[in-house]
Image (cartoon, rainbow, N blue to C red; front, side, top):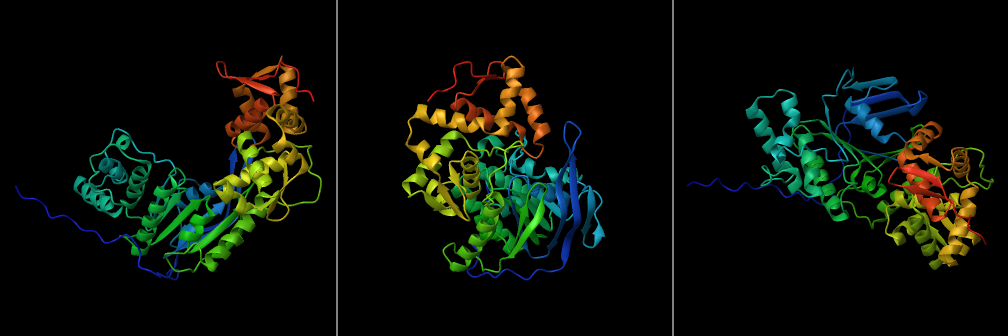
Length: 450
């Protein structure tokens, strides 16, 4: 029996000091893009406003922004999956109609069909184009080689790790031979080591200009990912999404996170996003309108306050994220939550524990419940919730509250917001949740007393 020779592949580690190539001609242009969705109750919801972006040959573009800034919406408009409400999309100088033939997209969720093998999942895009079977097999094998999936062709998704599943997603995008690879937070569901390895491999594909691939557009929540990978970084503001700043990143690859140039760029973007998410104001916070509760649970808030107290009561937001071993964007959400409850202040780029926050850290659990109960009763979100419960014999279904939250806070994810409300309210013995019938109820015990 004859054996086929073992195929060899070029090493995936890029040569030292690969300088980002100069951008070529514009491949995609988004001009004066606006996007408005309609909420379930029929109200318009502006998501993007006057967005102007170009994607050129030979560039790696990262789009950064807070939740609600429209990052993923921009990517879907680029690929033709969404048509903007206003503005124009041009591809190679011509108006885009339908799907963008220059692009393929990799999603955060792996979106693999569990009944198909790796090779069959990768060939789906070509099957949809009615490509001949021989072409599907040949191109799928080539994509499998590009992403290091040899030996897994006949495996099913349940046999694969998260990293391997995302390799399948990348190969499925490459198999249609795009000029622009679009990636929507492709590493956020992976562990740190797997994500780091895949980032390196995506950079290798970009450097190699594998097949027809010329450019990459990646949406990410991670500043470090942007600084490590991108030749250009766009930062978005939110509600609705607008371009807040743009940064060129000419550092050679592979990039050293300890270099001063890397640190300086990271700090500039950190400062910009921190100031966007945690704007410092000497004015008293208004409570007349419904507040947005950041997605942070009480244990996370208490943990952050404990770190601050142990560090003398004051830390920079970036240092606090490092001390908490959390992503920067996650840490900002916890800081926002603690600030909303008056447990911290954020003057400039620093986070400072308040006397009330220090009191909370030093209190026992029952005293903590009393303090939190008081603070929650000051928030309009909880005032309205308590009124609703009192008007409905002390309990309301989760589904009804979801509809209410959707109506009042259309930019937010209502289920995530309500889950945060329930977490805070249960800890403070203000409200309860009964899972067997999916009901939120008023705590029937006496309010915590001092």
